[in-house]
Length: 317
Image 1 (cartoon, rainbow, N blue to C red):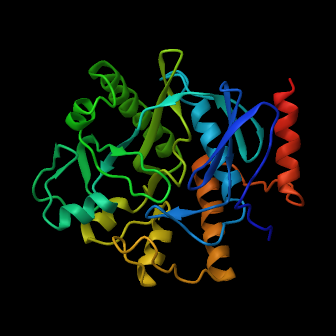
Image 2 (image 1 turned 135 degrees about the vertical axis):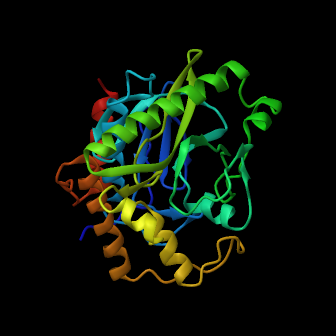
């Protein structure tokens, strides 16, 4: 199996700066375009795990490219090209400091909060008597702040976003409109693949005064999918849903003693080669299910060299 790519340190022509996110490394070229490298790093609960997952970056990058191309009629997005299987190049945007999280079903952190008695998330009131994995009457938007590396994203309401001036009322209305329309499109595409798009997140920014969709969309890192077949039956029996998402990584952490709200420096459970391979296999399953195509691993002898060559060739055009 190929070695995971967990660190990049390129120096592209015209490079002004580089930002190393939890899983992506973003290179600023002349304050004009961004080169986003999807590494094989993996994060859960805002913690980057010590081992990378082979082919994860390629899979996420290719899923995101496919969905960005399939939603250009809804809103403009930042993507210009994918010169390498692990790279997307796009226009530079001034990002809004919030992530637009949209939920069609009650699960994950929202369910954990609901189960503990919470009936309002991010200013959205939740109905009484809901069960885990139940569909909301209509999708709800539960934004979070965008945390710096090592910090945790915090829930924030529409009212707080406006009060803090993170977006104007006009901008926020458009962010909401785009978020719901993108989620509806993602739901339609998922349904054709026998999947339910449960929840996801979008990031937006401004480019030349216009709001653009940024980053990646509808990948297993930013989204949760259920298998449609058997959903109703499992829901009625109160059984866990069969899902395609990163939740299995979160569950593995919790089952191995990781505390969700524990100290930032707590020890991560050991990631054996078997654990790493099982996560990689799950990502391949995810990729093939979401895209309907067989995963074709990219040439992996010298991944850094390949990326550098492909990006330089694109930037030289």
